[in-house]
Amino acid sequence: MTEQATGLPGRLAALRRLARGALAAGTTLAIAVYLVLPPLWFALFGSGELASRYLGQPIIRAQIGALAGLVLYRAVLLMAANRQAAANEALIRSLDAPLRGPAVRILSAELEAEAVPLSYMSWILPVSGFIGTVIGVSLAIAPLGALIDATGGIDSAAIGEVLSGLNLAFDTTLFGLLAVIPAMALSYSVDLAIGRRIARLWALV
Image (cartoon, rainbow, N blue to C red):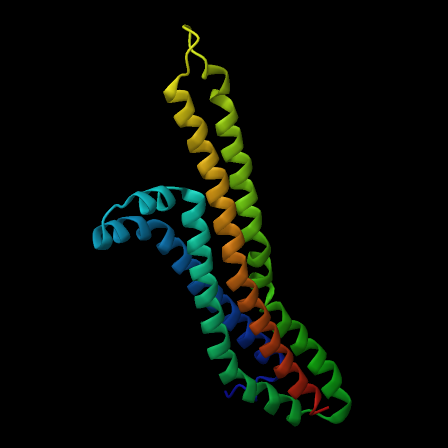
């Protein structure tokens, strides 16, 4: 049975399979980057001070992995969606005129749902940075009471703990804010592509 013959339910099912496949691919890459990036980087480029500092922080690895997953999600989604566009338009043409408007509205809602993961992650990335800030500041505050040792001197170990917490706070915030720039660009590009596909469908009504 061809995709046109399956009608609107078949088209919706095909679009949902497409969205699930793209999301699965992006999620798999994000997890792989989170797990594999540090050992792979250290094996190829060595464990420099900056690499150890940044890649050793789980929140930053998660941010990098999420961004890589978003890139793959967008690529798979748009590549497959371009192949689906002709079938969507053929379906609308095959319907009687009174049915075209409702069918386009249903297809439009399904197409717009494809952009939700990108919009969601564009919001999650900076929030993850702020979560890292709160955790880092909490870790920095905890040893403040031990800065002054029993002799009235400065405890260097406590200073190191304070600085480590501040590093986490600033680094995660920086990566979160930097990652949201390409994430928003990816989200807008998908929104634009979906908007164009929906406009072509409405032109057939």
